[in-house]
Length: 355
Length: 89
Image (cartoon, rainbow over all chains, first blue to last red; front, side, top):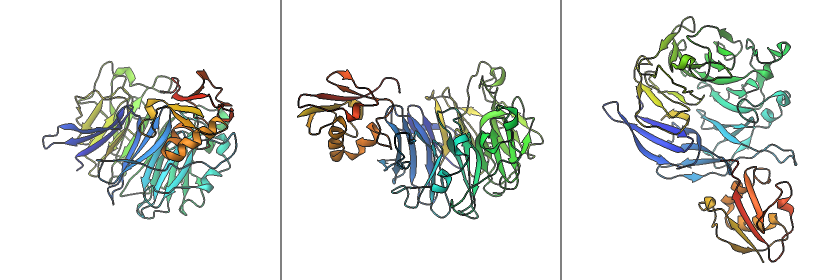
């Protein structure tokens, strides 16, 4: 069970702890006033990392070696010098630590970096940068494409899948030396019809991998819900899932690959819960059916949207937490059957992370 | 020498108060400051060395053209002020 939550918000990072009575309280508030985008903790060393996206002053990475008591700003990675038109990094958007201690970092515009020394030095993945279809990638909610999901196979840290809004899902089985698109079965109905199956036009909003059965991936796509049981070799679309198949996050049960959670909204020009009723959908049978979970969630005039990094599941698979664009945070201890709303009114939530 | 000051928003990475700076251009003047406070560089310039989109530089109380301000010549009496543009917050 995890008794600690890091809430990354528009106005800083909140560190929450759970008491023995299932009450959560703010233990500390850090990076006051600064937009926290994403947070992760290295499970081996306990090192914490936070991505800050300053509206004026650009993206920053900070690290804590003492569990969040003090932070140091890291030397940020950079794109190659490419002249006046060269892209610059706008957001450090995703991080994941492999079993070999290699820290992977995804950016907007879509780039991949890694560090073998907990962020002291960074190396850009040249092969990823050189992918031929890159000029076709587009921004999804941002001015440029971005890497938001990094899935590293716990059986082999050289096996990596990354997902791009908008640019599909790419896989490397040689530690990033080469990449291939894994979008077979995806469909994009927002493009000209002839491009609907073009891998570079696919907009995965979030991809999650089952820790105990890593062949199984779940994806919340702009077009709906997809799953793969062969590491993205083929994707199957799930066409019915409660009020909507549109949304941003997906959480997969850590030991049961048939169980996954989504937070639906009306697609895509509205992006708020259907009829103002905020619900979570859950499948326990691989997507054949979905429970609509609403106990403890607002059922009238709710316009909460949960961003792709703002739904987190702990290692037991029983506890989930989520935060919304309107500052609500909810927790459950029974897989979503019942939710409790925290009393605080947080700033808009970008990410929620059990640590 | 020209004078250079930063918005107080940057006080965590550089002393914002006016200081005399050497350099033939605005970029030279900034780089002289970044030598003493290297963490500030990434707050003013992006990873390609360009002025960040939402940072504004005023030269003698006149906002510089973002496309050319870094290479603009400065004189002994110039006052340079670096601030956050109000567009990007």
